[in-house]
Image (cartoon, rainbow over all chains, first blue to last red; front, side):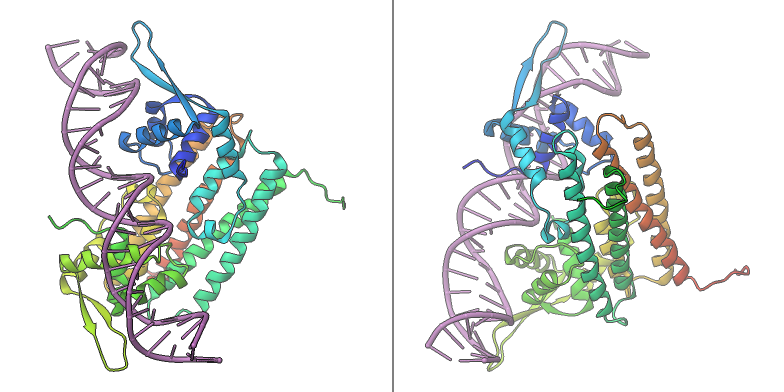
Length: 187
Length: 187
DNA sequence: CGATACATGTAAGAAGTTACATGATTGT
DNA sequence: ACAATCATGTAACTTCTTACATGTATCG
């Protein structure tokens, strides 16, 4: 039955959790913030909102005042918040890393005010583990890469490795920031 | 008419330029190398190859020997190489950066043996410019980011900035490597 | 002889892109 | 009056995903 929510759907749920919006508001967010690269096209957003509404994860109310355009303000429902939370809590696996860091960072961006600090730290630690093991894999590939075949291919792979290393450094810094220094051994 | 080639199509062209492959070979490349996250599903690759063949950008020949399975080996055609080269030479714009670095790095990976060293250096310098201006934009967004609204949202944005900064450092190093030190002024 | 790897495809469905279509309100 | 912005949607098309379908060769 209820077909699964796409990344765009979760992005909409996350934004609607922050505050109620019209479809147009959401389009503007995608158009103006460089945060995630979703399309601002009405052809993607309005159908996605309709799907979420049919599923019961958001509810839209039409506002019609005098001297005011007709607009439909969407709010997240308890069911929608449940779906969002489930998505945020999903364990981080190798697959998530391979498909790109974008969705992972989107999840992280929405965790505030939904997950506990401990859960957020747990997510970051899982990211660290997965990124690190993926970097190790990429390095293996680099080592077994035929050097003569493609110079730029090698360099591109190196760029990927460095990008993941930057993400690893970031996760550790954020964890340190979220966990107030308990330098001397605790439980 | 001839509908435009997708990213997957260009990836196939690039790989077939390196060496002729069967559809199965290409699937294995996507399955085993962590290089780009394309699906290994036959439902995407075989239709993509057929589209390229109909367009005249690749040609497949059926090999049928005794004690050998029937297989169709695809080669890139001169027309296909032309398309590939055009894609590699396309100027780098802001849009390309917003849509993600993956396609840009894929292009770079295939430039070897197709573009001149000068063109490759030009591409990297264009990347540097675009990444840098994009980082500036992201920093502006970070500055005008309501600090109380979302701690993790801010942190996610910072992660993106750092990731781009790593890419910028990489471009400069590769440029330096490709341009043998002509410290004292030359033509 | 059975499992695994080789090898190629199709079919149904979902989702996104682009373009079209409409209309109200606000600012100049 | 006109343009720009607000505001919502639909339609055609392409592509990708998932699952199904088939069959050969090799290895143990």
